Image (cartoon, rainbow, N blue to C red):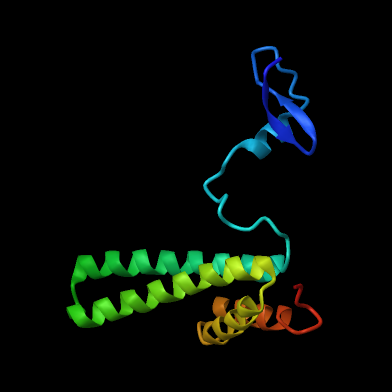
Length: 144
């Protein structure tokens, strides 16, 4: 049996046609995923999920806004670029907050609070998500 690697002190065999699947979980741990750079820690799962969800909503809004503007061309170019840059900034800050929150870092706590306040005016979804983040970033709820 050829060795692929060691996981948790065990030798993981090379997969072949007669592989029983006994160490399938170990084989999957050796595989790099597209999100391998993101932290694996399970701190502040709710806040991290909210930031990922809001980043997805911002990405959707950005694509939809650019598409609709392309169809009608009602906004002048400087205004269009400034709106696109603001949406991109919010998207990037939410992804950064997602990463920092998962690690339980203090800067992730403060960035989450700032972004939560910015989410509040986008009624109704942003208001609910902002309130959840503000609640989960209270000192007795935060995991560091």
